[in-house]
Image (cartoon, rainbow over all chains, first blue to last red):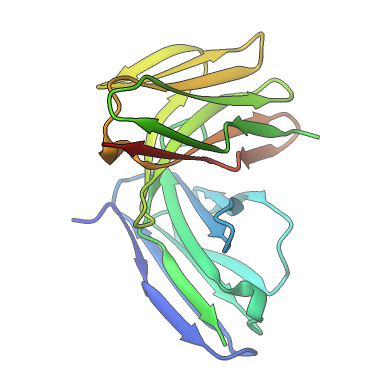
Length: 112
Length: 110
């Protein structure tokens, strides 16, 4: 009964590949987020969707594209992976931007 | 530019001590969020504040809107409180910005 789940938990891939990370929440929340945590442990927001609409879009490369098929899912697709994309990616959800966020377990991406 | 600063960056204390972690921000905000990241990597939300004070067990969070400052306090600290504590601030003006502090690494020694 995981509230926010991410798949896969670990992802090792070659430079230049395209990969997707999936996120699902069963909390009935309207808002979902993607965060990137780099090797220095800084947590940085990438995107936020509210009811399938993009509301926060920080400066990230165009190679990153979020997709929200419904409000319970927010997937992250990454094209042409680069070494610098290696990080832990966290998905989160909340009822709205002002409410408590619930985090997924993270996806550890390693680009070789 | 909207900024969030946390202090201290690192904090080591003995079990039982009262702990204070600070978060300052540059302009008016809509809400402030305190989170905890465990050594294993998992992230847990502790508080979401827009005014006043909230308490949950041994944790207390306060916010002073006029001074643009929030504090997270831990009473009777315990080694299991060892974690990174992060504040994040929601700015809502012409658009939405969610800006995160760099985190405070707390170690509680038995």
